[in-house]
Amino acid sequence: MTQQVAVGVDIGGTKIAFALVDETGRALADHQLPTRPQEGEAAVLERVVQGVHELMHSAPAPVVGVGVGCPGVVDPAAGVVRQAVNLGWAQVSLRAELERRLRAHIPVHIQNDVKAAALGEHTFGAARGQADFVYLALGTGLGGAVVAHGQVVTGAAGFATEVGHLSLDPEGRRCSCGRQGCVEMYVGGIGLLASLELYRDRYPSSALAQANEPTTASILSAAQASDPLALAILEEGGRALGWVLGMCVGILNPPLIVIGGGLGHAAWQWLMPPALRELRRRVLPQAADSTQIVPSAISVSAVGAASLVWHAPQRAC
Ligand SMILES: [Zn+2]
Image (cartoon, rainbow, N blue to C red; front, top):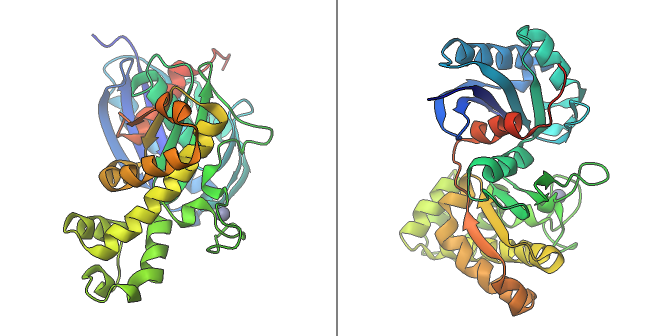
């Protein structure tokens, strides 16, 4: 019997995902709305409120809080999104704005989206009962979080585990951050598509090389058909992921690394063999052997956000 529920909200660049989640991490209902960040911050906040209200009306038990995951640099203690480039936001008082607009005296908790997903794995998923672990999210780019003693490590300015922009080759591919060779230019959707453009001409027999507007999904379906270009792209992406795993294992030797994100799941079978080989080339075997690497167990992003409600310290609202 569900005693209380939370609403999770995952604000992405193109869509906002909502879920009504019980204390065991089960999504009782979910839905999505478009983000349309170009309409401005107030319009996006109104859509968040609309989506939350919709789920509150159908809740079978009292809603005890709203957890919101948001891309960019988020200060959960202050309740402020310091910067979210995808949304065009800077210094947005997300928590206070939502609590005011919801008008329901329900506490709102905010966190960076990847860190929220990591806490979701800790609360409900593959890292349940694990006080120390690393979470990596492979999607369009590559994000990460370190959880130590059950708490997310934030860093001095919120950039801890910003692994996607670790440069593995400072002379390498140019990244949107203005530097070169960032690891997400080799793995993640951006990286795989960058590899495709670079290597197209080397594989004249590849069907993928002839594709007009290829997507990450077309690379994966080509890999399924053993397309040589697709396999080469994923091999290189896997090695880049292995380099990141090596950094994590070499510095932290965590008992567990959880790999999530849409691409993390979809490309697991191709990325992981080269990633694990690369890991073993880069760290002591005893370190590699003592770190378990598993796929994430939570596929609904808003469930991770909802876990913020149960993970957050009690706060007067
Ligand atoms: Zn970069």
